[in-house]
Length: 125
Image (cartoon, rainbow, N blue to C red):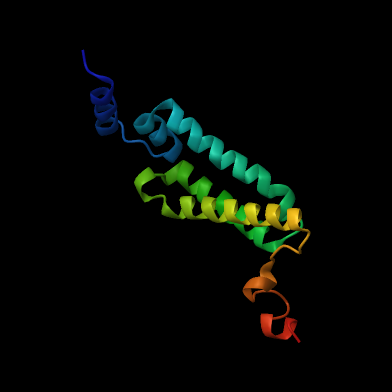
């Protein structure tokens, strides 16, 4: 009787997955696969209302949707650095907006990075 680890190894060799979520489900178990799917869905759903107000959040939402779609078709969990990078950036902008809302300060936007209509130098004048 093969062990669970041996069965997962045999499935990975015989049937290579092309979906990052399915690969996480096979290699990390149902808890790890579910956690990855929950992280992706929760981050995207929390970015939707913020994307209507902020162009940086809209860009992150679109980039995250693109990276998620690519990982569903050509995903390999060990090569999904851009997906995890975008998830981290999205969580970072959500946290900055939460702290800005608590402190009643204006939240950073694209102008903060010098990408808005005015540059940072002209905004300080």
